[in-house]
Every structure is written in C-alpha cells, then in structure tokens.
Image 1 (spheres, each protein chain N blue to C red):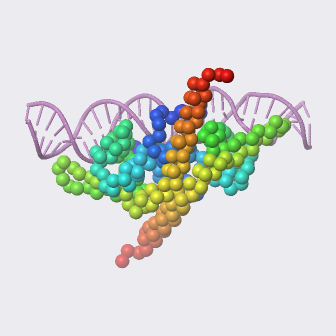
Image 2 (image 1 turned 60 degrees about the vertical axis):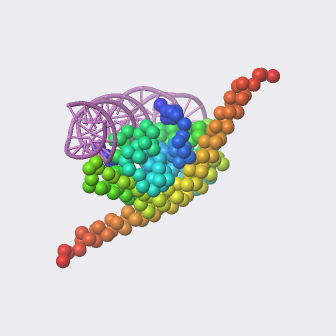
Image 3 (image 1 turned 60 degrees about the horizontal axis):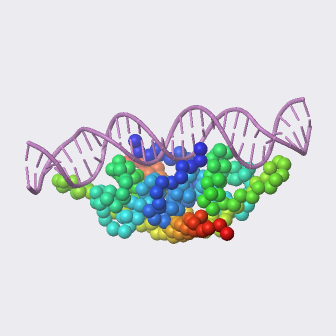
Length: 126
Length: 126
DNA sequence: TGGGGTACTTACTCTTTGGTACGTAGGAGG
DNA sequence: CCTCCTACGTACCAAAGAGTAAGTACCCCA
C-alpha cells in the first residue's frame, strides 16, 4: 500500500513542506538527483546504501505525484527509466539548503560534545 | 516509551535536521514558541488543536534533549512550567523559513489546481 | 464536599512505516 | 539451456509512531 492521503488541510507552510520530504530516503533522493541531474533506478539504488527496492519505488512515485520528480520511461528492452527533478523539486532543494547548513552545524556540535566527554572520561581525576 | 536512539551516523545535514523536526507537532511547536517567546504547557496545548497531552510532553522532552527548547520549572503549587526556544532552536526556525515559503507556494499551487478542476467540471461541455 | 485547574505518567491499542522475500517479461551472453 | 539484467509489483511481518483513557498530588473556589 502506498501512503495514505493526508486528512485535513495544512496548518502552515512548514507543515506542507515537511509532508513531502518526510520519508526515510526522500532527502537523499532529492540530493542525489540534484547532484547528478539525471539518474536511472539502479544508479539511485547504488547511491543510497541500504535502501530497499520497494521503498525506492514507493518514494519515487510519491515524489512524482507531488510534482518534485519527473519520470521518463523508454520503451526498450531491457527497460530504461530516467529520473530527474522538476522545477519545483529544484526549488525545494534550494529551500532545504539552510536547513542542511543547520544540520551540519548540529553534527559538528554533537561530535565536539562527544570528544569533550571522551577527553573528560580519559583524564585522571585530580 | 520515548523515541529510540538513532542507529548509525547522519549521512548529511538535511538528514540531521529532518531527524529533529520529524514528529507530527514539532514544526508547530517551534512556530508557536517562536511566535510567543515563552509559553506554558496548557497554552501550547491550546495553540495546537488536536494534540494529545502525551505527544506534547513527549515532543517537548525530545526537543529539550536535542537542545532546541528550554524548560523552566517553578516549584509552586499549582505547578508552573515555562517553555522557550534556545539559541539553536531559534536558528533552526530561521533555517526553516525558506522551507515554509516553499510550502506556502505549494499550498497555493494545490488550491489553484483544485479551483481549475472544479471550474472545468462545472463548465458545460462545448 | 465537590469540581476544576496544573503538568504530567502509565498502560493499552491502533495505524503507519519500512524491511524481506519472491515473482515478472524479454533479451543478452555463456 | 541457464542465468543475469532491467525496473518494478505484491504479500507478509516487525518496529516505530501516535491516540485513548485513566491515574497522580496538590490547591483554589463555591
């Protein structure tokens, strides 16, 4: 089963935006497509280590339905399908950039906290 | 039970940021606290129509653990607890602003699509 | 004496999400 | 002939997330 249609209207813009990026791999898919422009299914799969084929197709379909991703099918054998970002998808990625910066800061903070604690634990008590 | 500790490190900043805002009400809590500066538990509850007390406390505790929210307890009877954003929480809110704008655009687009379809359905076929 | 308000906690249940495993069509390569 | 490749679809299952309902301790007000 695919995602249940959302009940009720969005409360605010954040609400609406988080709705389309929530999903374990959607942020990474966006990033991967923005990075490479066009990607085939198997390329995306290799780019997202640990993703299952089911989730990848499901997320791609949802993002297509949300107008973020364009899906180009070539009637060939073996089949070939190419994914790329739409204009809205690219705009979303730009809007995500400051959030990404904040996240990088958070990771940095977290790591320096860990280091401090490790050092504190390693130091002999005076 | 509270949220399970995340397994494995973050892949990128987006990943780290989405981890702290994912949760049905976290975006709204952030918005509410940014809007009013300081809020008590019951005020937040009234500001988020439909939230259960359980989820509100759970989300507030997680956000406190993530360093987004400050929790000030006054040893009074009846009890009084005040919530406000930390510096990191305010920075996160700023980083969310472009995403919110994108979301507003999306809502606008969606609504105009609906209107177009309604009009198309209402029009007599030529 | 009874009801309401404060800020929770706990137990139980239901829904959503994601993972695993398998099936598919047709051609290419050994 | 047998297997691999593509890009999926489907069935089943486990874990996480969220909702419901009830209980807690103390005070104020009528």
